[in-house]
Image (cartoon, rainbow, N blue to C red; front, side, top):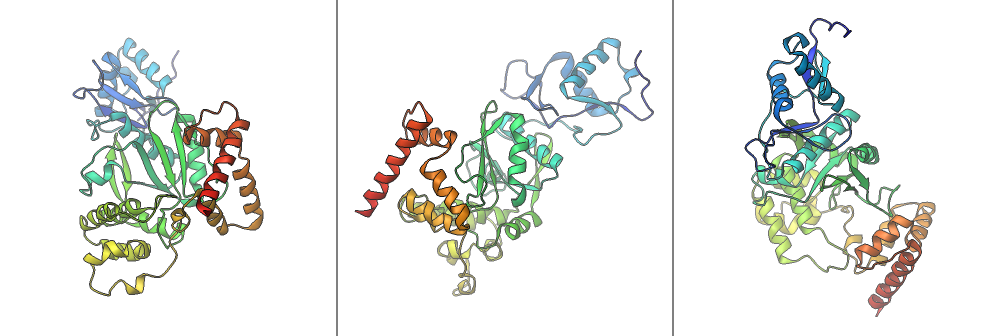
Length: 383
């Protein structure tokens, strides 16, 4: 016999993201696309299950007595899936159902999912780049291949670990365990969308905590998949996008005119970008692109400081770049990193070989290929 339901409680629709895909070209017969509150893949609700879930959105909490026995059986199954619960309220309650804002509903749901997981862990985060730039009028291209977010710098690894059960794996990273690298990358097992969790943005003079606090201070909400996610204010977002546009790549040479033009376009599309670049400590990197927007000579006082992750990325080869990057850590940490780069762990060695286009079949062979390649590049640059 079912236990009596306490007063004020009833069935509530819950999800870590939800979209109305009836009018979308997602799949024949698709009705509601949802991310359950338990780790797993997105699910598509059809027929009676979708109708009941929609009904709950308008009437939750809904007493079980308002449903037939068959309907309650369907709701019990949805409860097992993590899509409804018996309660008076719930942090993941869905209160409205909207069509997708992005061209890829699944990509949109990744934003909602990551925001929910971060909130559950109590980790502040701000989503950067991607389709938010278009929604803010800062670029024309709508879609991006991955999801980028900037979170509390001290909790990057914690958030990455919390997302692994949902269908991602931490990408091999020789810098893991240090603060040298500014991004933790998660590779998808099922979702088809990488996640990059930033501890900082390359090119800023401010330290990690101060820079994140400044970005978080005036972040604004956008609604993706039924969840409000934070994105940088337009002026802040324009500065960050400009930094990314001119970010150097190892061995790529000087900044190109096209990169500068892209950065200038971002900076000119939002009001207050000069002031925000000063606050963030982005003037040393973006001075050339900011000067047309600023009063003559007004940037002189803000041109000092050392931008994070910039000088080492300008080096002509990886050996020089990595050696320069390691100057920021103590000698014991540096020694461990040198050993890790010369003879890396299995996952790093195999990933490095794949990235370089080699088909190494064993970690040992991949290590030798990596070592020979590093020596060859270093010798070539010495000449």
